[in-house]
Length: 172
Image (tube, rainbow, N blue to C red; front, side):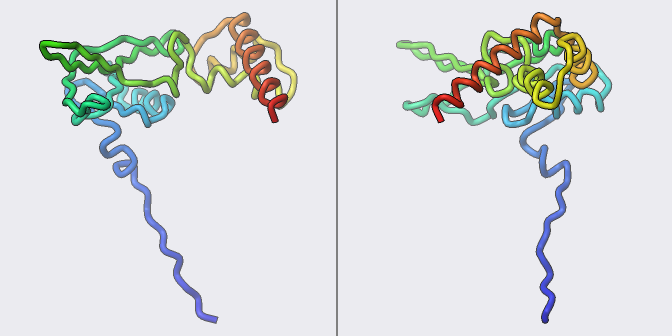
């Protein structure tokens, strides 16, 4: 029996972050594909005050028309009520119209919400494992994610997640 070598590739951090995360002049440029917990770990590693900007890239074009969009300004977002990030705002303007587009991070934190989706699903995960009071779950979220949420907020997360899962089960 002939033994074959299985090809494998070494995964380096620079290959993962190349093009997705850049640090320039105390600004951390992050693509929306990078999960927020990795951004948080990078900030902990840097251990300095850095402005975090989620952006879509340099060569961004207007949908349908293909006109190039220019960077315009930033929108501030407070994630988990304690992590300030910025989302890049793009603009295209001519004599007839003005068009704006903002980097979409709804898969990390939905619009009009304070907490990231991973934290919002945490109470339901704890309920599947066993019983924990909402205060204990809040303490565990504080230890794991450095996000202080009240007992009432945890209760709301649990009810919303539980009702969403019941709806999905009925449809199946």
